[in-house]
Image 1 (cartoon, one colour):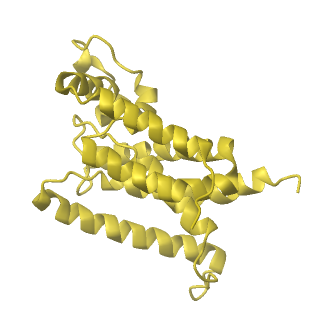
Image 2 (cartoon, rainbow, N blue to C red):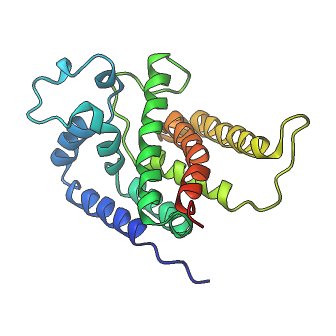
Length: 220
């Protein structure tokens, strides 16, 4: 099996791996997470609590900067393998520019979901003062787009719900169920999982895939 070319996917993988390699120095990693991690409180209450930090990424950019920070080698390798396996297929369909828009849009919508879950104190949400880091929210958006663009069988209606709406609903329920299960199991394994970022990013992919596809082929 030959994977399609994916220059944007390759670039994202390389950038993430280079940043992860640089931040193998523990003190650098800690500073980067404080400076550029997604702290829900910064998106609602400002950055006063971080006044002693020398440099802070502007709060509105932290959904993006946090997507290039990871919690260790295993974290970044797992995320990048998933991006390589899925991302190139989606990039082939959408084209590089729109694929990048999907990735960034998913990162922001994943962050919005994580912030809202923290603000509402939903189960398994991160603390308002705890950082959420990793590309998994953005990659969840790519996965959401992939399962919508490459269905394994013809979508079917759910009773009165038409097939075009039933499939995204079914996929969302399945993805949410999987991540909620991981949220229960993760702590016992010593793994912290930002499940609401995953769910938010996945929904973003479902919402953005069709409009981006129609935009690419608008002149066809």
